[in-house]
Length: 287
Length: 292
Image (cartoon, rainbow over all chains, first blue to last red; front, side, top):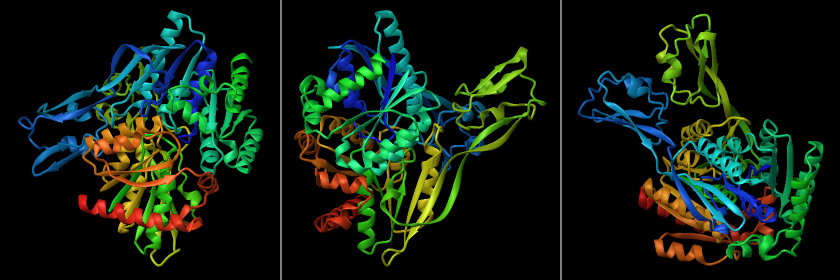
């Protein structure tokens, strides 16, 4: 079974909760799909066995010796990435989306496309199984494609080595990498927090997740920071027929466990957070 | 001056800092606008009573195929570097996988039969709100992608353009989390970046990523540590070692969390925070000026 943990709003506790679920399964593939800000490896310290390059895109490079400054590339670029500066054609690599149109239409073939290949994907072993995660090189794009590549590797590993479960620690938001995390997963766990922001971002991610997944569950993390707001979230979920499977209290020991490089299940198995997560595990994995 | 409030990690307090700075700048009599660039989950609006001035639809170019003219030669699919055009020539079938399309227009250039026309689809909206709370008029611009849309950057671009056109002396940009394209789009043309982090291992790991990115872009920046009292001391050691300016520390306090959760500003609820944000504002303006 493949479970995607997402949130809409960032910082609600996705990674801590995903890691706790991994330690409860005892045997699974942990996948960090937050390629911009991967964190789960900090708790699992995987021993890296394989490293792969990920080509995240391309950018246009102008050969100034060949360029005749005709401006055809500039007029066709829809991303406003090409400008003329002091008589020279220049490419803004931040704006360039690597479509290659300029290099195709250049009458003097002065433009070539350079691959952007500094992002890395890792496969490693840790105390509960295998871990797959990526690091998008700062500023690179295509994180959605990167997430699909990482998941493909996780699926292959699961098949080859007989792992029954894959747990995906998702990125925040509702855009491209989130959609890539949700597509084809069996169940989604949405982690929210009791604030106006948490509620409105949760609504948005539920609407997106519904297009891909039937079994959606909500966890309200730090519910006691605003009990009234937690009630509002529960009411919204009730009206939307989405089960709220846990309300986790705010507990500094979650951070203490993180500092020690462990999950809350490992460090404080008797805490209320841990016991409620055990219940979540039973509902999601055994139902 | 353009100031971005950003962070690698989500939920560190970007919006908390951006909204309180926005209010503080106004109270200091400065001409300022706030642009909510977190278009996947915009929340800055929760903190203000404003009235809507206008709504702009953000459209992206999208090819439209005239299958009467199409000869299924496959040139458009060859030109498409995103594999967004799926074509089976001998079955006369052509499909556009719109979620892969970047709207580059290469297919239309490739087509020799005039079978591809320009069309547009809405990917999000930008809303403009105004406040006359203090002497100067201030504006809030909110970008919001439509649910199910993949790419945040066109909406961020449109929101920032709207912010620029307001011509206020200061523009505060509330950035989306992460260090990839949406973040780059937000910080690319700013004068100064404020990174908000928390003193935990996750916070530090993501801060490092954001710092590397900003160094790569040659952007001046400083750091605000939020939720001081949780976690450990490693973030402080890192800042010291890297000679990064620590602009402010906001203590972890359940009252702060509660105020934020209901859409209240710290600076209007706690007098001590009002003074503190004024000193943070001055520091940011000074640092931004010296790097201009």
